[in-house]
Image (cartoon, rainbow, N blue to C red; front, side, top):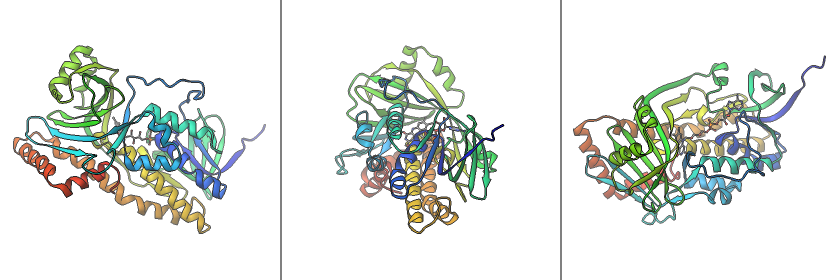
Amino acid sequence: MTLPTTEAVDIAIVGGGLVGASLACALMPLIERHGLSVAVIEASPILDLAAAPWQPSFDARASAISLGTALHFTEMGVWPTIAEQATAIRRIHVSERGHFGATRLDAQELGVEALGHVVPNAWLGRVLHQHLTGLPLAWHCPDRVETIEPTAKGYHLGLASGTNLQARLTVLADGGRSGLKERLGIASDVRSYDQVALIASVEVSRFHQGVAWERFTREGPIALLPLQGQTMELVWTHVAGDERRRLSLSQGDFLAELQTAFGDRAGRFRRVGSRHAYPLSLVTARETTRPGLAVMGNAAHSLHPVAGQGFNLALRGVMDLVTSLEAGLAHGRSVGDTEVLEAFEVRRAGDRHSVTRFSDGLIRLFGIDSRLLGHARAAGLVGLNLAGPLRRALARRAMGLER
Ligand SMILES: Cc1cc2nc3c(=O)[nH]c(=O)nc-3n(C[C@H](O)[C@H](O)[C@H](O)COP(=O)(O)OP(=O)(O)OC[C@H]3O[C@@H](n4cnc5c(N)ncnc54)[C@H](O)[C@@H]3O)c2cc1C
């Protein structure tokens, strides 16, 4: 009988989703400069990228990515390809149904070409995975990390295929749903919003001109993000349970209800792709680092998508981790070193806290149906439109240039 062998690696990334794949790409300079060995383990099978033509599926989810994120992707060398399917956000229009007042953030006025971009997730994933296949790292896909045990030198990972890995640094980027975090005794604070985001692509009767709409209604916020052509990504927040009826409406009835809820400002809604529901909660892991371990992306924090900040925040985490590891390596420290990871946690805590408060605060501010509050909020929106410095601060956050 042959005993299973254990492969030693410097860094094991559990999960090759948006965050894990981005981290693997961002680690490239460290792999080159310090000869680090990196393994990525991803449970879902990835298509044969070279052979499969990209189909911009009508029901795909899309993400608003900030200018800061685009800059990080540029550093990784993937932005030119991502940009092929990215739509620039030239203006953001925020308003509240039934109340006077709106605020607009305008790229031209702020002296930038775009406030951010909207990119189909399928395209982001494809570009990142395609890039990864050319990098000197071990890509275990499809495979699944089933066991995780701390050892004197880091963590031991047992994969479904029978492969065993011993990593100095293990990064949990598994989206937080695999149970691995819990098996390590890392608890999370979970607060359900009792809301569900209904996502779909919609076709509008007139060109969106790069405008992103955020409309707060009594039922919850409706966001429309510009995509290529006359298509927009709809994120329609519902009180949990209410989305079920809308998921099963005919196309015509759904479009009519959307038109009533949103109004005519973006034009007439003409077509809707398949609809998907995402239950929303605020999840914050109580620990994000331990010696030899970092928890990142949705596994560390899952936010309300109202402000489109989740992935942008996670990518700043990715870049901070790389910077902290680089600084540690320059001082002869291991990638799993306690002090290196503590320094990383110190860099991250403030950003994570303020973005979480910002997204959660927006939901609380617009979440209560009170007439009085409504007027106060409307006044706030009008005021925001007038108050240049405050609006510029909001814009800098939306662009991912503010922490
Ligand atoms: C409706 C909605 C809209 C959003 N819009 C935006 C937006 O506009 N802008 C923005 O910045 N953010 C947005 N977000 C947030 C963004 O989607 C998340 O931040 C991002 O998807 C997190 O990526 P992740 O890689 O951490 O997790 P995931 O995308 O969940 O990836 C985790 C990966 O790990 C793999 N995996 C799981 N368990 C294992 C295991 N045991 N072994 C191996 N692999 C495993 C999975 O197969 C998966 O590929 C939105 C979120 C929602 C719900």
